[in-house]
Image (cartoon, rainbow, N blue to C red; front, side, top):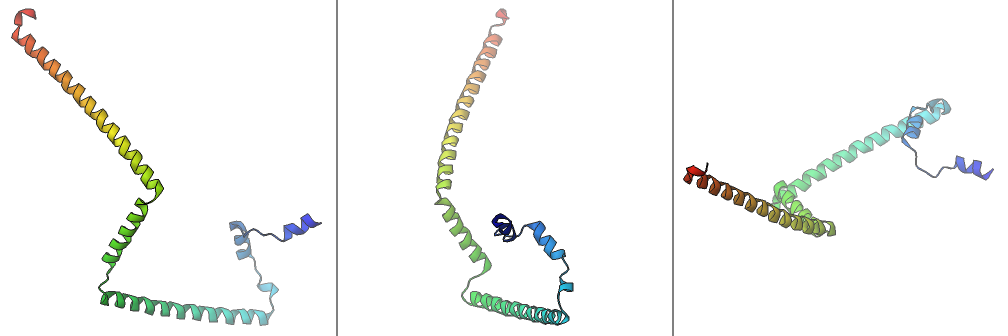
Length: 142
């Protein structure tokens, strides 16, 4: 009996399909006319409050912009400050430090490898040039 009761008292949040089922359910037939009228009045009141809050927020945002302009703060300065702060914060992370160290070490190895390849190629071209000059200067050996 307890296992069956536990199924009725789910503690997990609703999943997407559960929300869809609830949204598509028609509860209006379960409500009396008086309850419907109360809910409609509450809905109108909530919509009015949301509209008022949006207007207040808009006015506060305009005031914020005015204050920032008076202080000489503009969008570009804020972006620069935010970028600098974020870049500094990222550089101080352990992951960045380890990655930087690893890539730096790999870069040094790659530089050494390319240098060795370049030296080998130069030597090979030098040997070929010597061979060509030598064969041109000694026509009898051809």
